[in-house]
Image (cartoon, rainbow, N blue to C red):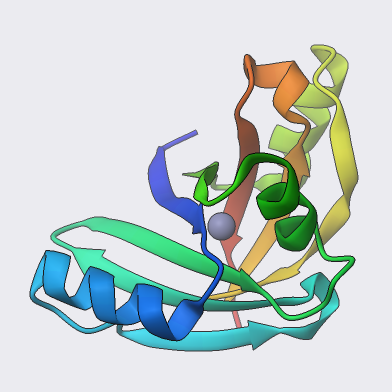
Length: 133
Ligand code: ZN
């Protein structure tokens, strides 16, 4: 793993959260994107080299909707940048980390995959690799 790519924060109302974080950073999100397959709307802020992703559920049965129902708003995942997501996913699975689903297209032009929070001391882990196109 090369660095933290972004931190994902689950929010109830993306428009309100965008306004709030725009004030916090004194900077607007550089990207907003709906990821239909995940049932989420996202927006991304850049602070120096670091990114923050805000996620709002667009469907009742999305992971974000379930998360907010259980735990309220807050830090949802930490995403790590990897060079080779296939190899890194295999490595973690062989180390006993519990993968959630397969590698798929995520927001912000990335290939992504997830590992269960119980594998990483309570924090959902996302791996992401820049999609080349
Ligand atoms: Zn993410």
